Amino acid sequence: MTEYKRNRVVVTGVGAITPIGNTSTDYWQGLLEGRNGIDYITAFDASKHNCRIAGEVKKFDPLIYLEAKEAKRMDRFSQLGVSAAKQALADSGLVINELNAEDVGVIIGSGIGGIKVLEDQQTIYLNRGPDRCSPFMIPMMIANMAAGLTAIHTGAKGPNSCSVTACAAGSNSIGDAFRQIQNGYAKAMICGGCEAAVTPLSVAGFAAARALSTRNDDPAHACRPFDKDRDGFVMGEGAGILILEELEHALNRGAKIYGEMVGYGMTCDAYHITSPVPGGLGAARAIELALKDGNLRPEMVSYINAHGTSTPANDSNETSAIKKALGEHAYKIAVSSTKSMTGHLLGGSGGIEAVATILAIANDVIPPTINLENPDPECDLDYVPGTSRHQKVEVALSNSFGFGGHNVTLAFRKYVK
Image (cartoon, rainbow, N blue to C red; front, top):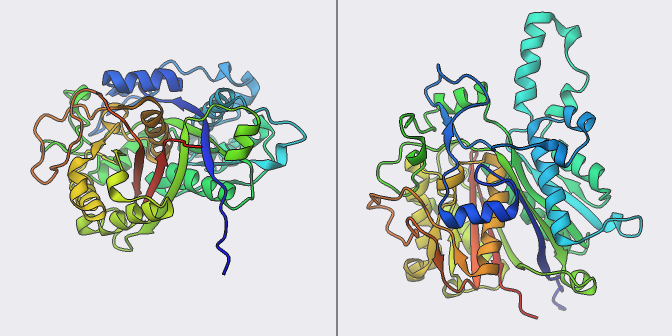
């Protein structure tokens, strides 16, 4: 039987709007500096909330990327997603026109979508009646709209979708976009994740589930992945986008190449709505599948951008998953959680963390895990505490796990002709 030939896929553009920088360059510099993006919530009065801290995007002006009328008809999550997509497209140098529009697609995930619009419109409904609700409420609220609007604003007419797999949404979207190019359904894909859920109801809901840190007296040190004193995650917002391209398509137009995407692993715990299966077995299988997909051996992996949420359950289980999947080599790999600086962007986290992972490969620098002062004995790997590290990064993985038991691992490597 003839083996099916899959197209090679490379990363040619990146875009990021995050709590530590509103461009991919500023974001990357912030990571390397160990910059803290977490502070007191300013988007609303959080004085009555158990958690009053978050990683908010600062000084974001959607009018840099959008006309005022267009921006007004978007929820913040879509503004962030479309803006980061435009950044990434400009970075890639890919021009979408009538000749190639059908070969370029979009997959951008979001775990929650336009919840701010939903909350605002519910208030209007209760106070002023149903006839006063906005006709734009539904298209502003639904989670697929960042993907749809990105296509509208860029002219991309190829495959278009949106993964809504909680905190794995951004990574699922990148993995699904990868498959589209591998299998010949697109030449290029705009993909990643976005989220803007730092809202009264979202914060209250996560706090009620006892998922959030309540270190309100010390926001800068609240997110502390793998530390024994961690007490929950800190919400963040933002967007991270990659431009993936079929290799020959990228070479033919002389594109710069950050690295190659080679593997995608996806599993489900089938265990619990919020808690990971003990021992990280589902996460381990996702890592193993990504390695197999990319024809990679454990000893080839240099770096893992961990899901690393700073919750008691995730960090120890993810550590177990890494050890199960990679064996003794797990102790020789640099593992870091960039959430320690940005907070947890939920459906947007996989996007900005894939950007960090590919830039680590391109620059041979590993971003740190900040606030790791008292390591949990169950978390016994090399988490690059405190400061970034210069070292060769040949192969890197990015992990994302979501409520519902979703597990995703993306595998990238240096591009070699």
